[in-house]
Image (tube, rainbow, N blue to C red):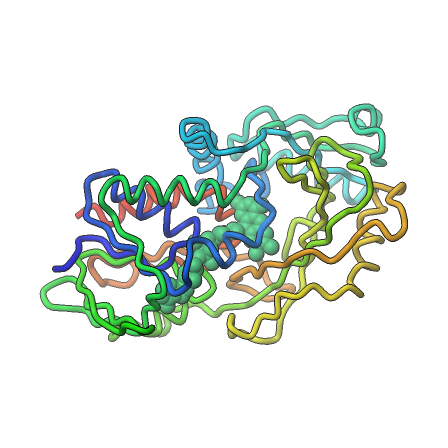
Length: 372
Ligand SMILES: Cc1cc2nc3c(=O)[nH]c(=O)nc-3n(C[C@H](O)[C@H](O)[C@H](O)COP(=O)(O)OP(=O)(O)OC[C@H]3O[C@@H](n4cnc5c(N)ncnc54)[C@H](O)[C@@H]3O)c2cc1C
């Protein structure tokens, strides 16, 4: 075998997996189609370190988020990666939203999320005078991170342990070998092949396509891909909040929220724009300025003082969802040999939010599944 562990995709999740194997003394190569780390979803998100209170108890999203968050704060501290534990308020503006945040609180307690607290509207508005709400759920463990700094730290960890990231190296086809291992065919300027004992498909939006390229892999085990774009708007007004402010969640997302970057600037989004294409290459990442009307309406529910003309189109990302509008939200899929029967192989599907927060826990889970 050319290498023990081969990881496809150098986003936050693929890098975390590769770093975990490399620091455990494994020989690791990451193959990345683009010319740098984290050029897709890992650089098109809110950079929020999530608490873990939204996800059904016992789901992978719950377990990976809570464990991943704890690991991530410790990792960022040790590696000196910029981050801030600013905390977040999930606000209710009506009776029905009040019931939603009470349900999130109850799930959060079951999910072992630390220090959650339901507070009155008066208390929340005393903390954040620009806010209007009738009640709020306070999550002090929520924070923000410099996601690129985090990925650079993972890249450093991989390389310090002798691992390699090969850029401009798209995987096009995979052939299982007997009695075990894989031959991975790559395209790009220097097409070639590389053999490995363990293989991890962490190709994000392209994970289904990579899985379709594995000879003999049961197509019935490849979940459908549904794309849901998330648009962001920047804010030219003076920052009105020092904590993250989220409304009650909506179908497909967490609602148009206020996040802050590390410099304290406000940013709004993401919304949920379901796409009709299932081809990630067809996603148009430009933000349609006419969506600002929806943003003003959503944000003024909890920030009535948002001035006119204060928001401008910024960037967007795309969620690799496994279910469509109106369908129940799906869990992360970490499909190992126990599911598909191919020794040494893990396919990751549907790693949308909170994938960044979960990345170090997903890495540990994948390493455990491929321990033998
Ligand atoms: C709008 C939005 C907001 C979000 N906000 C948050 C948040 O605040 N907090 C949070 O925790 N999570 C958030 N997420 C989720 C988080 O961004 C993702 O879960 C995470 O970035 C996924 O990382 P990844 O490595 O799986 O995928 P990616 O970052 O997409 O990486 C996949 C990599 O695989 C490469 N690749 C694809 N095909 C091939 C191939 N054939 N050969 C080689 N390489 C290939 C790609 O080039 C890419 O670099 C958000 C997501 C979205 C869309």
